[in-house]
Image (cartoon, rainbow, N blue to C red; front, side, top):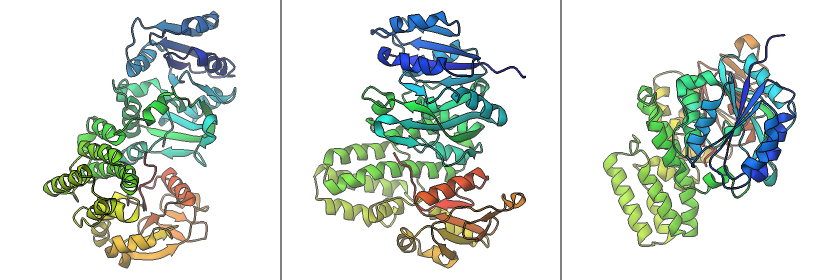
Length: 448
């Protein structure tokens, strides 16, 4: 039997004495035994050291204490620096494994998918009565389209939901010294390695008032933070202008999705926060010329500061003909995928047709917002998922569950926002079809 690779379980902790026992017990009951547990306490003042002391009788557990609080990202990095394993697995001190065979199964996936230097899983939040998982194992190929997925909240899960090869750090480096270090690391990883997300639920998250994710959810300007990280990534200069603007537009949509309810409720404090977020975001949207963007933002801030009625703010943004993404969001209450704004050009240059799937809710808005696309739409189908196409044709042909054949070279699928649409999106991605090239979700979804 081949030797089991060493797995380093990394536990960065601070003021979590009351939760560490449950976390450690879920590790020590694992059937996979070739592990080390690296615990780094970030200068806690509670009983963390006393709680851990009895566990140190197990030689696989090593405990380190920082003399002063060095911040969460650097504490995570110290865990990595102290590790000796081939595989690294963060497990935050308020999280735990869901059963005793988790590590055994996780390592098996890592071995069976050698091109994937990261494997992620589903998770459960008992206090929220929420389970987050894929309907099936989903393999995402390295590159831009995987990076785009990484911008969506929990598309790859939280940090405790990952296991990755230590060698991945040769390409990504350690975690950035930023509160958004997990986003930064994931965007780097998604660009350089295939990532497999399995459907199994292997992690249970405690979601309390002191949980790091709960704290992060209370922060504003997540889109601006992610954009600042994005523009500093080592591969940023290699991306096309359209790719950069596509991600920038997605982040704009996140801000707009918060501002629209604030307009409706005349919550001027939230509007000002949303406006400040917009100022931080990339101004280089090609549908948003610099001078016109400046004029829009100047007028928007005037309306907000003067506490103008909601209808006046709403009408102003919704009628801006030269800022279509903003106007459409206010008109329809959602953001269209940015690729739709450039789709006519690519259609005119080739012979591809458009097939709408599950777009009953969006079709009227789509025809109104993009009348130039109507001549290219050859079918408007109900909610469908993929059927079983011949394996040797899966890369070039998709067979929908009603028997409709989609030819990759001739068709572009426009997918409506609904549960079946999300499954279809994931199915196409797992087969190597590219979002923006072979299929386009009509709405930007998964916004935080």
